[in-house]
Length: 136
Length: 147
Image (tube, rainbow over all chains, first blue to last red; front, side):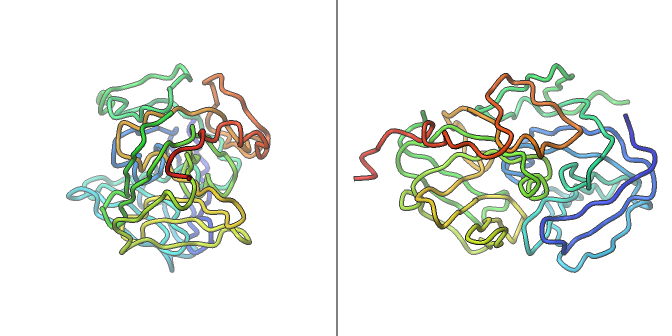
């Protein structure tokens, strides 16, 4: 279920701490080759309005432009993967593993499974899409 | 078991590595450190440290996450690459950074007591509440590269 009350989170070393004052969407997993190389396995993120995201600390927050208009946020001190940001959207993806527990969220689907790694199976019964999910 | 030669690297190419010899099967780690670092949970294969060679390491950075344990990542793109416990002869390599095909398989889940509340583990593989002493069992047979 989406979490209407928001939440907080951060990286491993504490150099990046954020909070969300607004709704967090359910979690989506992405198995594209970029997400797999960045996370070292595959990606899972919730989404919130950019206007709802604020930082208690962003001293070590760094960005990498992985595609035109797309940047990935990480901690330059501990290497934690934190954000996926499309400049054309008013929302931002927050990697679910960086949220403080409990998140109150649920994983709901898998996208770009055509690019999935060969060493694991997706066995949770959730919807799988070869590439992008159908438009909602 | 994997082929006798593997390669991999981060997203931006600042870190590229080669591994001589076979890789052990992969383990997923759900500990709170791996979850914050990877943004979901970790999956690592491993090899003897001497079998790992870095072809590019201009952006390789290390973070000491516990005494004697460091995590390797790319300071250019943020990719999670290595987990290195100095007391062990093996270095753990994040499987998602390997070039395809890897030829290995996920074999178990570790530290499931710390699993995130937003996903289930449904693949039927063995789950260990904390570390897995049987790790040795899934280490690869000796390779000519070890001699």
